[in-house]
Structure formats: structure tokens, C-alpha cells
Amino acid sequence: AQTVTQSQPEMSVQEAETVTLSCTYDTSENNYYLFWYKQPPSRQMILVIRQEAYKQQNATENRFSVNFQKAAKSFSLKISDSQLGDTAMYFCAFKAAGNKLTFGGGTRVLVKP
Amino acid sequence: GAGVSQSPSNKVTEKGKDVELRCDPISGHTALYWYRQSLGQGLEFLIYFQGNSAPDKSGLPSDRFSAERTGGSVSTLTIQRTQQEDSAVYLCASSLEAAPNYGYTFGSGTRLTVV
Image 1 (cartoon, rainbow over the protein chains, first blue to last red):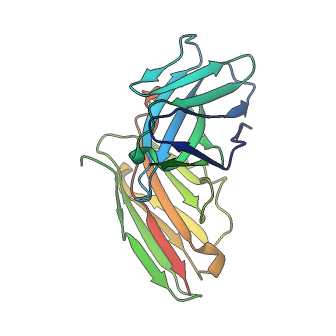
Image 2: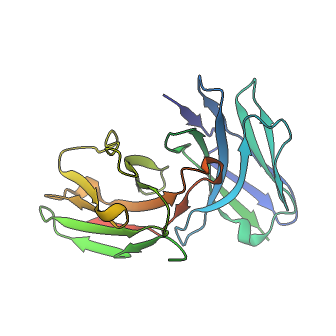
């Protein structure tokens, strides 16, 4: 079974600064996918960024980027130039091919003006 | 439709009553998932439907919980004899299993409160 661990329950960051959220996972699979989802107070889960395990290059989406370390089974998210609208819960998720998404416990991010 | 639609958005029910939660996935998405999110917590997997295969019910917490998916589209999650610990947000998601790297599209959830 796969497990996903987010060790930071809550993080705060000043507007325009950078924050990094950690995520580690445990699996025996070699072919899998990793995701970060954002959940604002509206409850809607929004896909922020995705990474295929077979790709060595780290994914980037505008101000969001990941540091994927396959050997260490680590998948951290960096939010650059933080904006007030980034305030939300962030969930790391793992999916092996043909299987369901497994989520970490989440990290609450608060962006302060 | 354009997104995953869930109804009702909010539901308050008395302990012991049965409730039905509905999920309308994105047209053409073959996979449908139900998750439960208790206050301030992560997402707990409940059940997974994929095409015509038997559903993966391994996450259902008790036999009071059941789900069906009719015609490979709309799904209903039923909770019988509700208990206060059933209070949570129930999230539905759908995906195109032919493209697993695209993750899931979630609905806005149903907030269930058992009083």
C-alpha cells in the first residue's frame, strides 16, 4: 500500500515571498504520478501541478514548481511570489497506474499581507 | 457537463436517518471516486468505480455505506442510519483512466451534518 506524508500541518508566508511544502511517499511501484492539489475555503480541489515519475525534469507551472527526488521519494512544492489568493490547504497525492489517488494529510498555507 | 456536479451542496439530517448524495461526473470519464474529508483533515478514500469492472469498496467504513453507479455515469452514495461521526464533506471525483497523469477533477462536495 502507498502512503503519503506531509509533515507540516501549517505554514505562513509573507506576500511576495517563497514557501516550500514538503511531501514524502512510500511505494514499491516504479511507474506512478504525483500531484499537488489546492483546496481553498470553497472546498473545490484544484490541481496545481503534476509530475510523472519517469520524468527527471521537475515540473513547473507559473509560480509553482516541484523538487522531485525519486530516490528519496520526496516531492516538495515551492510557491514563489506568494499571493493572498494562495491561502488554502495543499494536498500532496500519489497515484500508481490503474490505482486510486492517495492523499497526504494536507498543509495549511496562510499568506500574510 | 463541464465539471463534476454534486448535490446537495449541504445536507443536515437527524441521527438515524438515511441520506443519499449524488455525483454527476464529467461526460466520458470512465472512473469515478468518492472521498470523505472530516473537518480539517485529509481525504479518506471510500469507493472507486472503473467502467464495467466491479467497484473497489475497500474504503467504505461500515456496511451502512453503499454506492452505485448507474449506466456508467451518475453515482449515488447512500449512508443508512446516519451517526454523528458521519458528519464530513463528501467529495466526488472523476477521471479518464486512459490518461492517468491528468489526475482527477473534483466536485465541490456535499457537507453532511448529522444532528
